[in-house]
Image (cartoon, rainbow, N blue to C red; front, side, top):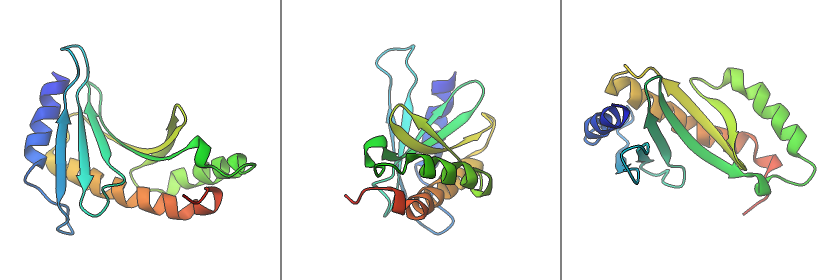
Length: 144
């Protein structure tokens, strides 16, 4: 069921753009077998380096953007970075920070009953928040 909802959402998003007119490129990445969860990779025009990954299950539509890897955090700055991220969590609209393994992420979750316009808003806000987060914490990250 959740893979069907994801397929329906990606089909609906395929011809849409953000409120700014910015285009989206969406690719559905199917799981290896019928038990695997499919993922949609969403590229926001001009921000391709920060793809958004969307999954759907019975309880939520989850949108995730990977921000930086643990190894990119300056030596001795991890605790300060964590403090800033926890402080920012409340003020970042519709998004929150977390980690998956050694990757810092920003994510947003929606009801599985959300419509395509709700999902578009989430994509737009999450993309904006990802850029803002990187800019805000850049002093804690190594230059690459």
